[in-house]
Length: 225
Image (cartoon, rainbow, N blue to C red; front, side, top):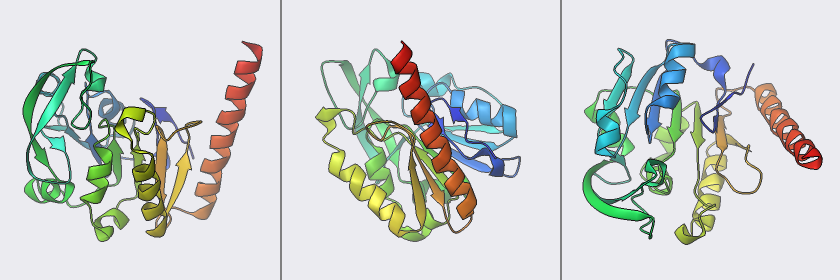
């Protein structure tokens, strides 16, 4: 039983394997999904809004790439581009963003229907604040069908004003039967939701233990730096 941190996202890897379907929102250069394919053989569906990053994504039989911005609606939206591609955003436009383009958007229900994807075993979100809309665009039954969700919430960016939205999303997920493990120290940039309907209480306790061990290790490291 392990909870590795893959590209800043903790996951529960004991239930990952060749039969697993991963939906990777905010694929960037494909690093997260490439690791899952290499280590566990997962089928990875990777959604990336930035055209240059999308066209440069790896080619692999288990790596399926799609040019969309994940959202709660289908259509088009303005996408703000920064020099650091990890800061591109649908939500925030700041001095860091030097240009804007129009990109196609899609909700998760529409995406699953359009591409004949029947299940999600692991949902990963790193989409610069748009994660709130993505959660709102999924109904309760769809969320309850997912085994685990790893998400980088962006309440650590004050300008986005997402603090209450993040808390509301976490409250909703708990009401749907998910355990929420916050691996990050102060804000919610590394959150793992585990579906208690399919993942044992022992596993969830173990995840919380790992979280606290990591916290103690950070404290010790700071003490002796």
